[in-house]
Image 1 (cartoon, helix red, strand yellow):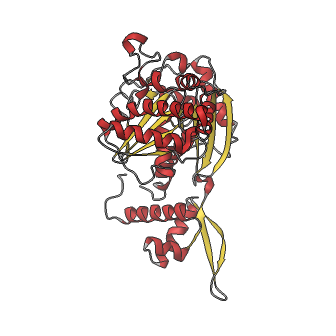
Image 2: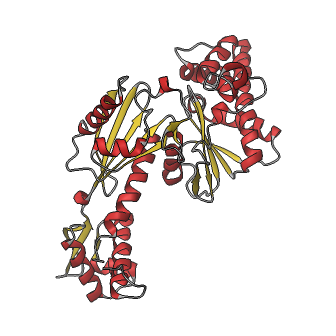
Image 3: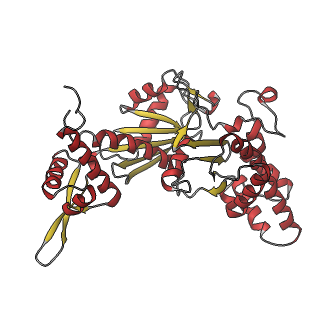
Length: 398
């Protein structure tokens, strides 16, 4: 049977159902009159809609609300058990898993060491991480964040050395993972996922053109243009760690996936060595940056040296950001990762100052405001968007 024809009762019901479900997602439990007012539906139509959504298992009663004397109104909410989604953040050290219901409420989390074993055991480990969250029901979709990118022309994982993503070097990676996990799976670059979360919940909310720079042990970026993620022809848009940068070796001297370019100038290991040269110590680069900020707030030679070290880091970050800005011209740059977040507003201001000294466009520079793991948050956002679209489209038969 063909799908609904524009203007038919089936299409109108589907539109009304989605509007009501969206209102319930955004505003929480609502009464029938409130749903009618928000969707513009009459009381009889709103009643029919709620009955239809209850039968589909998408809406449940949530008690009653007292109104005028002697009057009560039934309250409805999204049925959280209508569907569940999973998110995985896979790094060289660990697999972090999170499961949420269709409302976005997190219902389980679990962390396991990353396997350095053959592909079959990788799938077993991913399954184990998801099962460790104790999902209350079968998952509808899983989104996996990795420190690499899928090449859409080959279906393979690219922009990472095999040693950094062991077990992932297989053809048709996404279908293979979907089959192994027993649920539709998507693989996405971890920095892109952080940008998804930033646009939905953080400093980039309301911005349609922005760049997120992830400065940590490794360097990466996500580029959002016109409100949409720009991935590039081979999935490598934003792989700025490999970007040739003044003062750093190139791939010609170091090798394709060796430490070169922007990574060699601003990566976490380099930042730690740089701050040590200014007399600032720390157990790792994150602690060293935080220590530099504390020292810079004081007086004397140690404070002067710490400020000089922070300016040096900011200048290095700004060189790469100036190149990105000259090509993309974003309205906003969001900084995140272990190199910049411990530096707080002190380092952010220095980066913005250095960038504006190098670039004709003057984009605002802001720190990430997403709490917790932004990769998992972005993965859940993508999974929820896809599953809600599927589930909310299933209330009206075709």
